[in-house]
Image (tube, rainbow, N blue to C red; front, side, top):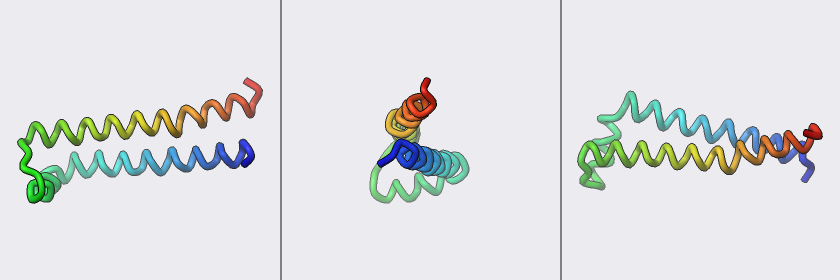
Length: 83
């Protein structure tokens, strides 16, 4: 696999993962009550626990995106351009 193909793959993966993160965030902001009702059927969580779980999940997901997509992409760009 060439660095160009790998770089393109990481860039698309970064965009796709950020799209998922934004959808999750907007669903949490604009459809929070609906999400809480759906999750409430399976899990009995307080409002603060529900908020903390989603906030923590988004934070972990974002760290994963930065660690597994952005950092390797930046490293490949530095290597490709002789940085």
